[in-house]
Amino acid sequence: MDQPVSPAAAPAAEAISPHCRLSFELNGQPQTLDVEARVTLLDALREQLKLTGTKKGCDRGQCGACTVLVDGRRINSCLTLAVMCEGSQVTTVEGLGTPEALHPVQAAFIEQDAFQCGYCTPGQICSAVALLDEAKAGCASAVTPGLCRVEGPLSDAEIRERMSGNLCRCGAYPNIVRAVRQVLDSDRG
Image 1 (spheres, rainbow, N blue to C red):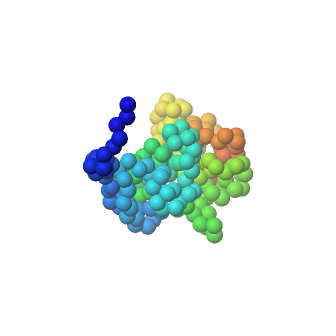
Image 2 (image 1 turned 120 degrees about the vertical axis):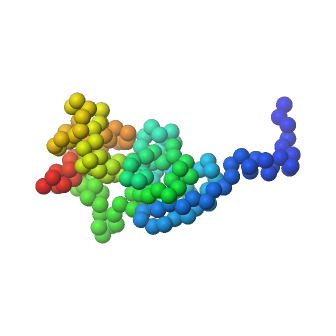
Image 3 (image 1 turned 90 degrees about the vertical axis):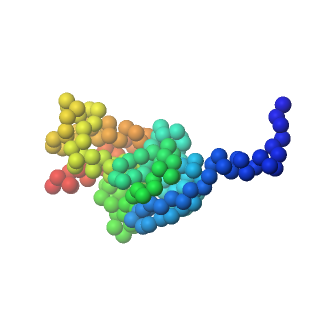
């Protein structure tokens, strides 16, 4: 039988999840938040900062809808505690470009019609931005021949592998690959 919680026990519950002051750079601007220690970066972005471009899909790190960049690397913000980003540079889809000056990946997604319902698109775009940086750095993927440093242009199989953490339930994958290819080709040219 459950015992009622006494009012004296309430302060002990607060001690379990203390609030923390968190300072980081968000989309190029300094940001300070007071968050409960167990709040995810996704929830801090959406609920406290009202940046709703980053989507909550599965909330289990399986769909990639919540992908953002932390210090230039893509992460699932639903699996990342906000306090883990202390002192980091966090970039969401809102920080990549503006309506007047789209990021090349954003422009390519529009030109290649690389979305349908659009729910996964912010995470797909953030992931594609990281993919481009990884390719420039020569980072290998699971399908890189010999698992060695990437030399030359990425194949479509490489692009698909590198984007595999981002699911599109509408099935816009061919157009997403074309959008990434467009940016890769324009970078080479």
